[in-house]
Length: 311
Image (cartoon, rainbow, N blue to C red; front, side):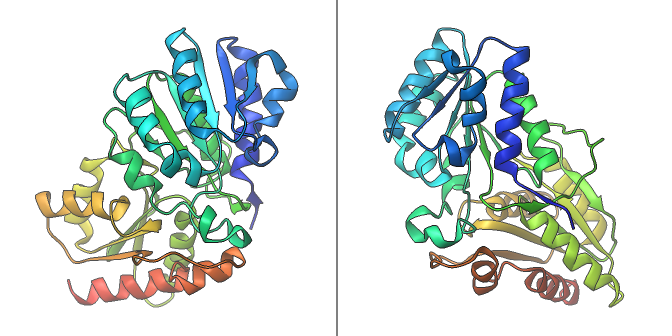
């Protein structure tokens, strides 16, 4: 299985965009070798600004540049881009609607050995609560490049969450990203897994296992959490009658909460949720943490079998 870094793809995509649009500027909070914005900084040093370890100030600077007509990309680790900067995000970007794209790396618990202090497991809930923000979690590197390009050409504040480790490719090079439109990456009639980010590949792995057991599992990539593709959710609930939601995020306020609201309002069906259960993880290797927290293909497969039995 081919694995590519979404954060490295982001950095290289920024360089492509910078060549096409001289109005793009990039900010970072002293983490550019990790967020990979250093590629842009090397190519366009006059349009790259290292704000130092002052993430809140970075958001203010980003707002000022956007108010001056620039298309701004601002990057740091996801935990800092959400928890540390929330008031500035609310005041400077959500309430103004300025054209700033927050692209954060090291999302979820797969920061691994960096430990609990660096795990962003509340970020999606926080950003989805902000009026006017578009929230995207790409499934792989190919979708990352497409999503970043769409963000650059769509006015308004964005949050794009990327991962630290290399992750499996889900799509081929001809994939086309459509903002706010979920993608069916595998068909199935018995149940559906609605997944986001790194959990899409794990959902596909689970679907392969389930197929050998006679269970047809549809896999939906809900790459855009906001605006949410409510039509796709209602349709899959009606067609398969059982849903599992998989995400690398706390149970409260993430994709599962948003999907459940739509299902309850349109077509109530049995549901199960693969996510973090009101606790932080520990320090350790990414796959070990995913296993400890119940975020594996095996966990998804078991949840699918459970909702199928409840149909």
